[in-house]
Amino acid sequence: MPSRFRPALSSAAFFVRTSSLARTVLGLLSLALILLLLVNLTVFVMVRRTVAYNATMDHTQQARLTAQQVLTRLVDAETGQRGYLLTAQPDYLTIHDEAIAEMPELLSSLSGLSVGDPVLTERVDRIRALSRRRLQTMERSIEMANAGRVGEAVSVIRTGEGKALMDEMRTEIAAIDEIQATRMTSLTKRSEQGARTTLWVNAVAVLLILLLAMVIGWMVRRYVGEIQNARDVVNRLNAELENKVQDRTYALSRANEEIQRFAYIVSHDLRAPLVNVMGYTAELEEAGKIIDRQMTAVETTAPEIVEKDALVAVRDDMPEAIGFIRASTAKMDRLINAILKLSREGRRSLVPEVLDMTQIVQAIADSVHHQTADAQAEIIIEPLPTLESDRMSIEQIFGNLVDNAVKYLEPSRAGRIVVSGEAEGADWITYRVSDNGRGVSERDHERVFELFRRAGRQDRPGEGLGLAFVRNSVRRLGGVITLESELGQGSTFVLKFPTRLVLAEAGDTL
Image 1 (cartoon, rainbow, N blue to C red):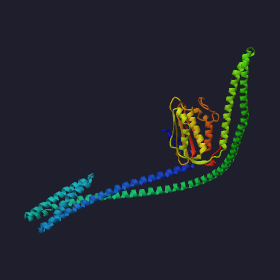
Image 2: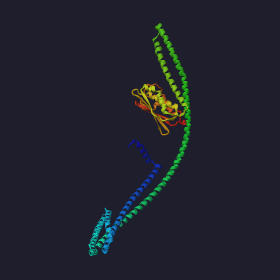
Image 3: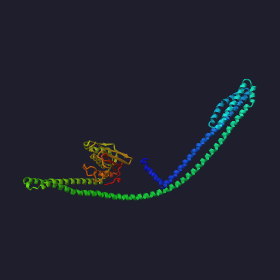
Image 4: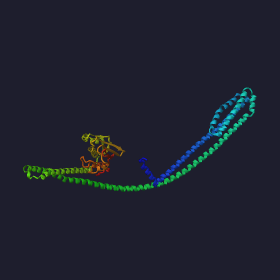
């Protein structure tokens, strides 16, 4: 079973197992639906039966009518025959001939109507045989009359053979009529019984559905009442929660402002002793040079009074110690500057404006062209959706990410940096900054955003502030930044911003 269906099946199984008003209503609605389906099925079956009954009755009626027509046409032929023999007028013979001409078609129709019915087939065969014999008798008498033997023709009629044949024909046709009448009566009764059954089924189903509808209506009304009560409780809780959130947001904002002021003050106060240390380090370095010159002069004039340890201390140990001090003070100066930058950024007012992101990112890519050219790398800027946000923050965010991507390209392959983006509905826009550089281990995906923390080989200059500053800026703009990366394969920073920056929702987050 595909894994994507498992959560839905688990939810459905939990819903079925858990007793609730929703499950009860769903069960009743399902029962009502089943009743409707049963009613529709019953009506469908009965309609099919009624259609079959009607077709059978129509067939039966057609067989009765055709049999009567056969008898009628034979009577017409017989009437024409007798009139012609008695009067010798051709008009009677015309009546006889017209009736005879229709007989084959009528007998064929009657045979077709009896196909598949052994009882009718047997009687129809007899009717065909009797009609053939009767027609032969009539033709024989007419031929005698045409030959001038009228007396012999009349004697043929007086033998009673024709009457006997017609009586047998009437008997067979009456039998067919009776059989078909009995069948029609039976079909009518069955059709009426089916109609009554359908009526009762519909009536019972309608009553059950009405009952279910009343129960469901009562339960839904109770359920709606419970929902309204629950909604009122939730609204009250939301109002209280909103007040608490506002209070805590205000407190957090105050605390954040205090932290920013504290960071600024601390950074400012740290800079004063740091400047002193850097100044005294310069004086100490200059004093070391003076001492070194003096030691060189003494070593030239009176080498026996110069100790070797003193020379090592002045020429090796002291410059090395001063170098360490300078490196440490320089690093501390960069850290203080970074803290001041974060503090200033947190206090800066955001100014929303519509930004041509393609143009902004292209300008950033052009600014590092000399670095990418030296590294034989390329930066591809795909068409980016416009964004309404703070220009300076956006430029700093994408500038840091592009610089970071260029800094950590893999020298063993041609570098490729791609900046892309797409709108997600009407409220959000997603941008991606992808590279095929070193990549970041999965365990360090969150660590790289921490202040003063770095991941991977530390062979590039930096203090671990860039990505922390980026995340802080993204959060201030109401966005989110995540990292998708695989060590040795490259990295993709995914940034999601609201389409329109709302200042009331942009937080100052360190």
